[in-house]
View (cartoon, helix red, strand yellow):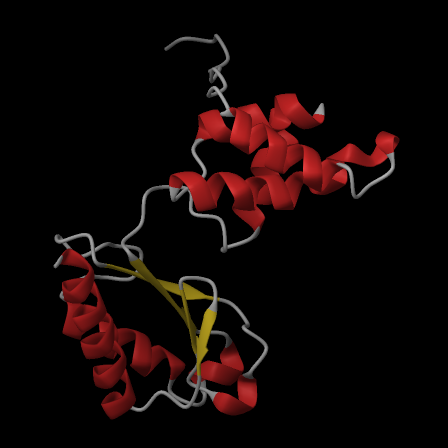
Length: 176
């Protein structure tokens, strides 16, 4: 077994990406450019669909941070995809208050309906299903977040069916 540390070469960032990074960094004092790490990671994810180790390294180099510090941010927040995900990423809250209001049942229902387990992507690449921690809407449980942007509350099995059917229809429209 090698004792050499594993290094990842940074990816080349486009001029457009660098310009977006610069706009985010400009929001902070010069000695606090690292404060833009979350915004830079979000930009990479918007452009690439996920944050690869090479992208983490590029962000670290741009902001003058240790690569592990960027990786810690990427792995702490579930809004950053650490591997490619489906067109529709569905995060179902399984924190205790949501579990008490059928959050775990909603997650299992979706897993059965989609034919995948949490953490997996459907073979057609349409859906990635994940459990997540608190989405801040415990009284509305079960709750979920679609593509890190659209909150869905009070998700009965009927509403889950409507959600999946609607997303599938949207995917079919886009393919036309």
